[in-house]
Image (cartoon, rainbow over all chains, first blue to last red; front, side, top):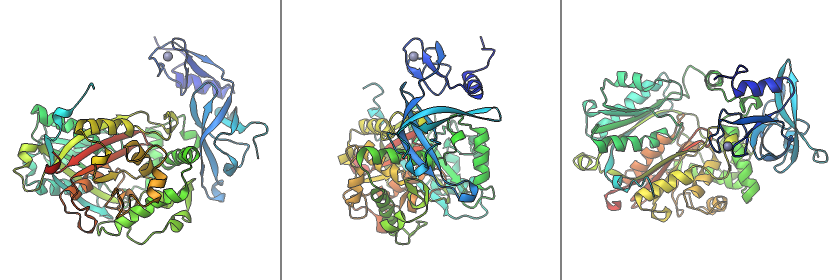
Length: 129
Length: 392
Ligand SMILES: [Zn+2]
């Protein structure tokens, strides 16, 4: 039976568009799941529920993409491990790209522009250099 | 071990290889480069196109690529495999090709590829835009990683963080590749290159510079695989497939469990198991070097170094000409050339070495070669161990 709200990708994005960051947890094995899936990649179960993660994470890997100043300048791309033991790609917004370091504690925030939500992160208090 | 494939060891051989238009081939299409390489590889095997009754191919652009290739070559293959796992595809094709030859489904498999990506009138920017639409990655693309390079940069950042690997050590990978390229008249970039020049070249996605990245060239490549008994009656010295393994663990770099450990640990394990060999048995290594970090990761994951030690291994000169382990003896993707998906060219260089036909870059007495392909963003890994008759 199809879900009237659509698949999990649409549901995830609809929450972001309303300013909410939610990920899934498997009701069978208990693993948190990201990116959103129709089945648990840990155990294959189709019984997954949405929940609001703490939003606390740690920078796992980092790069600065170089871009000409007139095109907007350099920007950060990071892989972030959430407390709930899932990894995702995002960027750290309140910190200069060359100041973002592996191991930094970061906090999730949903940036909504023209109705479209995007998950971004800020360095946690005391982490920004 | 389940899936032990020892019974396939040494039963098949690469009987013909060819490249065509590598470097720059202005005015050629992907298909024309593929067709010329295919024609030359079949001739090199002492066969005619009528003998080809199996085909493996892949394209980064066309979703139904095997059909126009069949049509263009004018063949009627009984066996067809168009598995597309990025740059490792043409090494991954070895296993289904061997299974098809083993079963008697076909007698001669052509594996062929061509790319006009350097000089194509369709710019890579346009192709990049089309891919964002056709193959969206909604959990990565919004952050504008410069893919594939930023994915490898993330892996490099992690390797540096965990093991103290340095930018100088990454640069030494590019310098070693260039030293090999300087011995190879077919290499696209042969000017001298120093570690300082790599370090001072344009940064693209930290910590990787433009000289930590493979070239963008045109080129076609092809090889022909037949059963070993038939290969022995053909003109070229057979290059036997001793082991093979392919592994895919993820697509997105953000879905990789540990950025310092690739699926090459699995593909390499399977290839070594089938060959009944280990890293110490390997004379030459052709490791898909899309970026300098790749060479370090594959040296470790294929067992030539302990995890974390490849930086020091390379800095000590082990992979350069005269070192203990000849790596990327044609100059690799970093200096020989990189026509979009490099895996087939790594395999062809392995064959060239085992035939003893590598000119100034010949590794004396080479009997075994490991050829390793990588695809996507460290997403697919395929390993083959090739050998001469002495290695059987
Ligand atoms: Zn589960």
